[in-house]
Length: 267
Ligand SMILES: [Fe+2]
Ligand SMILES: [Fe+2]
Image (tube, rainbow, N blue to C red; front, side, top):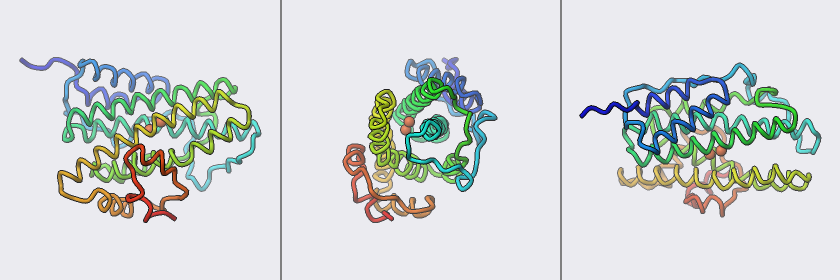
């Protein structure tokens, strides 16, 4: 019998090519739910776009031209913080979708299910942060944002091991390092609602790093390679700038990322 269900890759590609932020959130969550419920076939005939579609705003700026975001509690500083976090989560939706759609055909159903669940989390994180911005009288797109986040995806689109080494195991792991301090600062400013948001995101991000690490280690095992050695060589090759200490060793370890991976690359 032929499979008449729509394919997963078509659903993922459609979500990647949706520019409007709220529509992208819906498309990503629908694709993840439809995959979970068996409504999409394990089909990979649709190629992933080189670049996802994004809204006209925010204006994307080279990191060097981004206005400095102070650590103070001014209203402007707070808006800049939530906006920057919303942007990271917005790009994270596309990164998770692209991971599943670009590499899932080779890596298999568990890989796909894992990264579709990550995409659904990132869509939720973005939606929560956009709501937070709206409560503060702003919205996603009101400020300029960092242009560089998709570059790592482009540099690693040929190699799933490289993509896993950089996106979950460097970038998302970096989130584990910096979020606790941000959370404490937000709480000390009396923003308990903001602290709750960050605490939820931190818990989910530990799971995302764990998923990335699990699949990276499995790929290395198949090739009889040391995961720590392979990871260090991929990070040196594909990630500009060393890894900034201090690290959140306990959160990283909870995600399966021991110091044997990263201590040597600390700057
Ligand atoms: Fe996230
Ligand atoms: Fe994440």
